[in-house]
Length: 294
Image 1 (cartoon, rainbow, N blue to C red):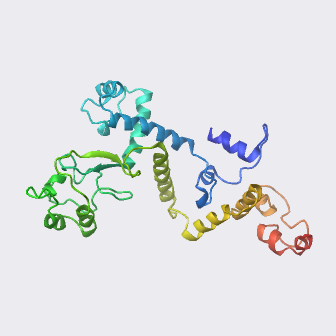
Image 2: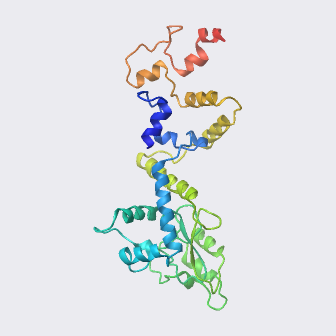
Image 3: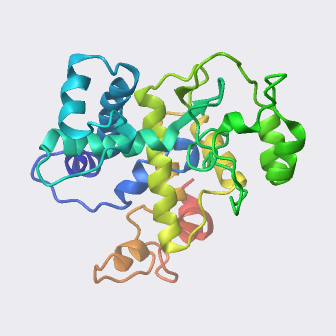
């Protein structure tokens, strides 16, 4: 489907074989980062699968959850479910969605008895929601071990002695709800409720970080570039003009230098002045014959 959308975008007619000037990954970037905001259908499908896993978490007594639990995770914890040789295609797909859930899941602290300090995600940070502090020989295991049994609040001295400063300050800023159960929530929504829209963004960013880490590139465009793209799309001109400027900014116009770079054998000299190579800088800013046409 992604290939069909890409072909339609560049060709717009059946049976045409036109050049795809930019990659599909570039087109799926948000507009403020230099893309066109096309939806990555694979990532969207993963977000939809994650929604089904969220239902298993939030409604463990539903008929669907009971059947799947009996078959695939008899211990009762869907987050610890693993693949096996006899699983169905549907369950294999849901396991993929479960990985998306884990990317945005967080524990909200109640009495702290259900949360593993070192293994569970419970600190409200962007990515790693476990403590940065290594465990070493610490005997503390549950979050309630960090609380004063008399006052029911954090034992500040114990927390500061156990964790690095960044972790300690974050832990002490968390509210404690004595007598309430710890609950699972979706970290990327203020109300803690899962949405497909936020899951799409989370998984898309996760894939992009892994991709750029593999090539050793920067994780995102700089602030200056982001500001440029935002201002570009604010221009009050016909969309075709703005899109032309977008393509010019990406050096993806069918100019002679670009055509040769894509493998075509041709003379790269400007068709008007016949002196310099026909690239974007020459054709739109330097060629005196083009300026004379204005």
